[in-house]
Amino acid sequence: MKRRVVILGGGLAGMAAALRVLDAGDQPVLLETRAQLGGRATSFQDPRSGELIDNCQHVVMGCCTNLLDFYERLGVGDLIEWHTETYWANPPHEPDVMRPGFGPAPGHFTFSFARMSFLSWASKRAIARAMFKMIRMGLAGRAGWSDRTFMEFLEETSQPPEAIDRFWRVVVVSACNLDLDEVGAAFALQVFQEGFLAHRFASAMGLARVPLSQLYDPFVEYFRREGGQLELNTAALSIGFDGRRVTGVVTKNGMVEGSAVIAAVPFERLARLCSDTLVSADARLQQLDQLEVSPILGVHLFFDTEVMTLPHLVLPGRSTHWLFNKGTDAQGKQHLHAVISGADEWMGLDQTQILQRVLEDLVWALPAARGLDPIGHRAIKEKRATFRAVAGVDRHRPAVTPGLGVENLMIAGDWCDTGWPATMEGAVRSGYAAAAAASGGSGEVADLPGSPVGRLLGLR
Image (spheres, rainbow, N blue to C red):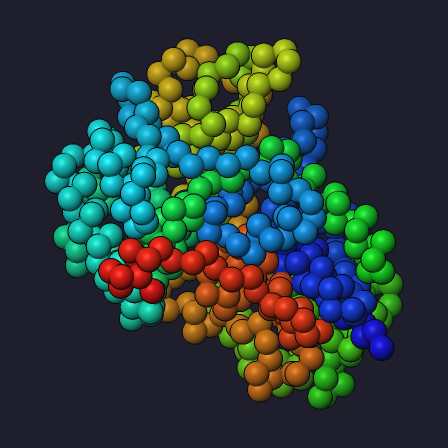
């Protein structure tokens, strides 16, 4: 007999949960407040330019096994363009290139890293020393750093200022959306252990060839064809609770009943949907006010001529962290996307001030662009982009499954206790796990296997 599972939120976590509930033979009812799916990882039509643009640049890495599984289920895996090389700006010289060599992980970047000239040999030796410590501590070893910041790890491994400013900061802030003196060391250590050291393909970077919203187009057709119920433009008002179990979701259109509820909405929204009685019955809901957010700023720039030929560029030591080449149209107009993570100090700036600062960084990285003004631009502030991954925050992140809480209420989202920082991968993992708890069936997809050499050295 099919059970009805109500899923709140049509972001990645909600969509992932919905697919797995279908797989298990139950009927998912997916409720989304907005007119489109995708949550924070989507696109919109800019009224100024008429362009369909992403709200922010999102990247999938080779280690994101669950997100890649989700894309393959939708049949959009071929819309991801893979890059195994990473380009680092080094003006006035040509950009340095970090690429995997012929050796096995975790030493596959050794030779290209040694040739990169934007860092001194002293910095390279210090970075290598820190990487070796990450390998030797193993995956379990980072748990001992959960209440300490990554800056403390860098100080303990005697990292020089150049290495911190030009290497560690740009990688960690981009991945964890928080600066080194705040971000929990365990989150940053995971980025390097599992994203760079464990497997040769783990660090490969995948970029969507199309606007993000188009990746989800196949979901709607498949979901409805297989018996799922999709309700867009449907605002949830509260989660029904009878004192023992949740009974469904109260919406502006009435009650949507279900045998289980998967709440895949931001933590602040979930708090507003829960009655005091429900909060008292489920300890996972009692610490939501301990979580905070960290912003990301995306700046879309349009030039009437090509100013960047590389697919992307890391800007070490600059306020702008990345430039992404979104392509050049038939008329020669190029679209670039600048990304600033951990962008607290940018949130008070207006569009003109933001453009001026980003252009300073762009001209630094691309001297050929000096004197060229964009023919259009749009800065998008994602003030609530991710949860704030500070040291010790994991004790406040709720579990996906209820434990001793309300047995048929699951929680999903990248902010839950997924074992990952705030990423698309974490969102999909939580959705898969929530569906498995609600309907049975398979849960998360296995990680990439660690390399034999890495395991021999202790990375296991």
